[in-house]
Length: 275
Image 1 (cartoon, one colour):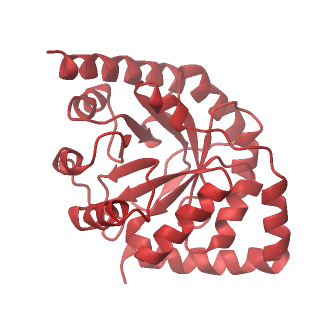
Image 2: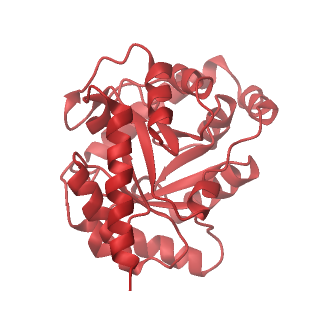
């Protein structure tokens, strides 16, 4: 069993517990009554480089990362630094996140919020909207083609956007095929350097896969990003944004780190696009 498979087993067990407390109809009603979602695509439509800054306490690969007692305050510092969105991990066992974190962050910032979770059931999508998410993560490695299409359509029907995440060329080709067939609409495409099945990092995967993606789809580089030099290098090969957590939660001044990332990325993009 892969690491991803093990995580999903736990996710399904925890989901069953939450379903026993709130029925599907109750969660659906809460989602439909929530305030309208914020549209992260508006930010990327302007051509700016984006930092999706993550509230992250722990990870399967690194273990405990930071004691985050006030996720709302951390999220505010991210917004102050210029983040275009805040990612909130809600998986409990490996990442020590919660839906309470998601609600706290949503109440603290005025930028879009991503629910970072292993989505395997439509209940989780209604849950995300009910607790204030504007974007959800869909991990291609964890979903069939049918689920990917179904969950994307449901997400859009609730006014949210998707960050569809791939880890290798096979997964990207699945997404490209579904998009070409007209059954899958892409909002943001994440290229994750970490293979969730093995936890190995492939630092060259973004530059490998980015040229295969059609123009107009914002590309988000994920995992293994720890320095401004790395951010600049990713921007130079086509990244429109990054999703970063560890480098921020372990830094004493996350707002300043985000400013530095944005400055270096924009400079690299200008050089890449200059004639």
